[in-house]
Image (cartoon, rainbow, N blue to C red; front, side, top):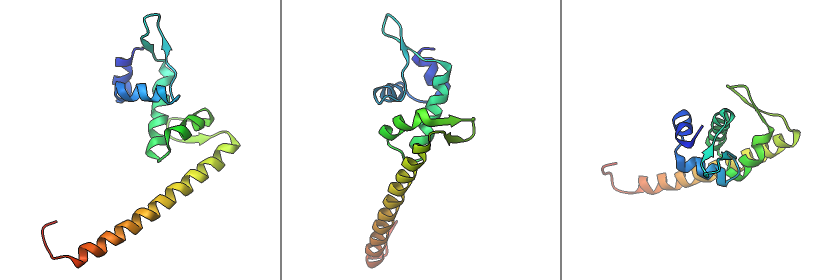
Length: 120
């Protein structure tokens, strides 16, 4: 399928599909004219990419993770043993970021509480 059909089937913009290709997340075939041709399996790959992005993984990590993920349509399951350790490290990174954001939120709450009462 051409890129327009891929956009319709995935809801992902042409720009994002091109970005995924630049990042090594998708590898559509090319016609002699240079047009991209996506396989049906690329629709599922985009869904996996979107899920992993929503989980907070950077695209470089997703490129490493994709070949080691099995997708049954509802759950992504790691199939490479080393992947689980990598995902645990990513989860730790995200947990640390959450703690930093919560600390920032606490500081802002203190500053706001010290100010005059006004419109929010």
